[in-house]
Length: 373
Ligand SMILES: Nc1ncnc2c1ncn2[C@@H]1O[C@H](COP(=O)(O)OP(=O)(O)OP(=O)(O)O)[C@@H](O)[C@H]1O
Ligand SMILES: [Mg+2]
Image (cartoon, rainbow, N blue to C red; front, side, top):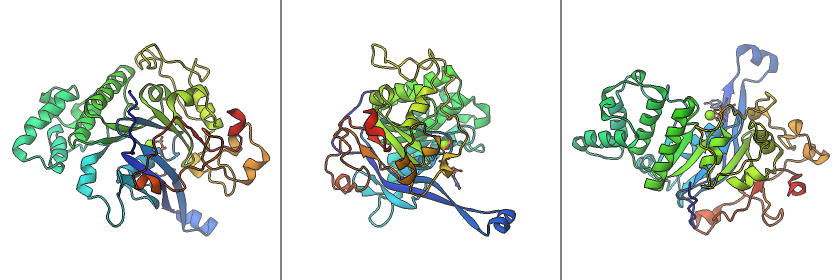
């Protein structure tokens, strides 16, 4: 997709954390004496998304991607931190109106089988979204028909229930529902994960067409690094609820600096972790590529549980860990001008409208990253 640069971010997360409190079972309460346990799903994540760009978010299962995506569209309130649309916060005093937020931001959920209400026909599902946008009832049917056509489905499907649709058709309905509010920002949470390869290619192409047509921005959460390479302008790598590397796509794939990113890219079969774009500037089409890719890391450690006080979260799995990695937690640093500035400590510049346009710099959370530059 074409990177569109713009001076001001469309959506910004500033130091967003989300913790869940889990009540413990009677047995574990007796054994540990604790009645509740905290899951740090997202830990102080900052991210800016610019108009018309696609930012990829990758990481192993349970690292906090979906939770962060939900926080970005206001479905979950962060435990701390804030999300801004332009300069307007979405929580607290003087926050954006909820109906305006619904109108501006949408999410395509991870599983098209559970994200559609089984009791609603497609028409009813889209109707709810059109009503949220304030479309008068007499115009909704025509709008629903044209949305169906736009996502490549016959309007005849409007009267069907989700169980009467294939996975790819459900995902198209989910996209039509998202488009119904005419959003500017869509979180696509693994929109391809339950689809076969040829349908994946169709949905990718649809998402790209819609972006070009409506100037949408996407946060694309995905497990498939080939899809991320193909679609994204920048990629954030998450581990244990934190961003560990954030860089323009080419830079990240050609020269990953965090050891976890290297592990993930090394898991793409037959590439040695390095891939070249074809002459159109795009990666191989998903239909051409063999999609055996999984970025599940070798270890089955649940990274959301990997918080280690005063140490790098990744050191137990890191082949290059040094003594300092066990003693202090690295910050997310910009490496473009040396290890000069910490990222995400304060984004008041963003909120006040100052330029924070990405200049191709990369952010890495690793004590040893400067050795790999
Ligand atoms: N509502 C909840 N209550 C308690 N814990 C939760 C809740 N939602 C998510 N979690 C926990 O937060 C962590 C992050 O979950 P999340 O769904 O964001 O991960 P993910 O990166 O999207 O994983 P996947 O790739 O498998 O979809 C996990 O440990 C999960 O168990
Ligand atoms: Mg998820």
